[in-house]
Structures are given as C-alpha cells and as structure tokens.
Image (tube, rainbow, N blue to C red; front, side, top):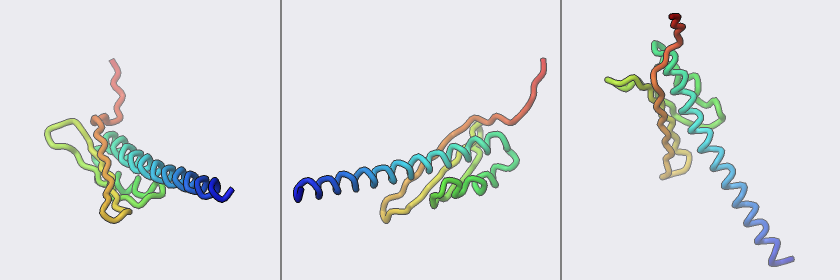
Length: 104
C-alpha cells in the first residue's frame, strides 16, 4: 500500500494536468476558429469580432482578426502566455464568404 498509493497519486495528478492542458489548447484553437468564421461572414465588422470571442471559453487570450491583403482570406490569431516563457499561439485562416443569396 505504501508503494502503490504514491504511484497512483502521481498517475492521477498527471492525468489531471494533461486534461487541463488539453482543454486549454482546444479552447484557444476554438476561439481562433470562431473568430475567423465570424470575421469571414461579417467583413465590415472584423475589427470587432475579436472582442466577441475574447474570453468566450474562459481562457485568458489575446485575439486579433485581420484581412490578409491581396487574398480572400480572413485570419484570426489567439495568443496567450499564461505560463512564464511558454507562449501558445494559434492562427486560423478562413475564406471570405459573406452571407448572400444568389438566385439563378
């Protein structure tokens, strides 16, 4: 029991730490993706889309949206530096697709 219990606690602590880290990365990637989707549909408001998704998933992230010059792409970046010396950055590109109904 004295040998098994510390090993069990270490394994459990590792699983919990990995789960928190995985959730954080998925939330950051989803934040960047949601920002890119909204910005690609609302071209005239893409400066404000970063504010719409900022902190939507309960993480401390800096989100920026920009239109890539000369292309039909919107890009959103989500960056955080919650651990000293370790920055996490995700950028998602999305084709510009404003809402429109085209009838033949």
